[in-house]
Amino acid sequence: MKVITSPAMWAGARCGGCQSRIVWRYSSKVNRVTGKRSLIPLNAEPVDDPRVGNIILIPNPDNPDGEPLAHVLTDAERARVPEDMPRYVAHFFTCPNANDYRRPRR
Ligand SMILES: [Zn+2]
Image: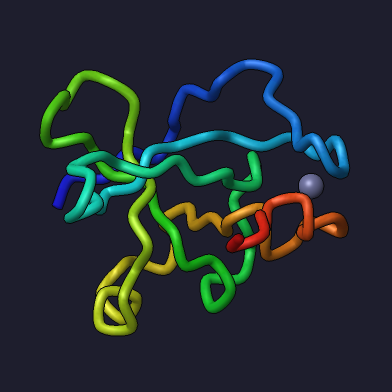
């Protein structure tokens, strides 16, 4: 698996709730119902602790030269990913205003 370690970022993106710098990435998973990728807000900076970061950036198979995709690691994958690979977390895990990301179900 080829991994991108220095992603270009969407310049200037910030969380609407807490103003932290974030990066929007499409998910590596395609929604089976809609056939589309969802967007995930990531903290712009990778985390230092590899036990915390559960997301890595991987090339988009549909567009290898384009923006990388956010791939949420499974437990098995986490064990295989090198420790020095940049890992990210979804911003809503650390955002103090995470409720802004949750929409009422009805
Ligand atoms: Zn925030």
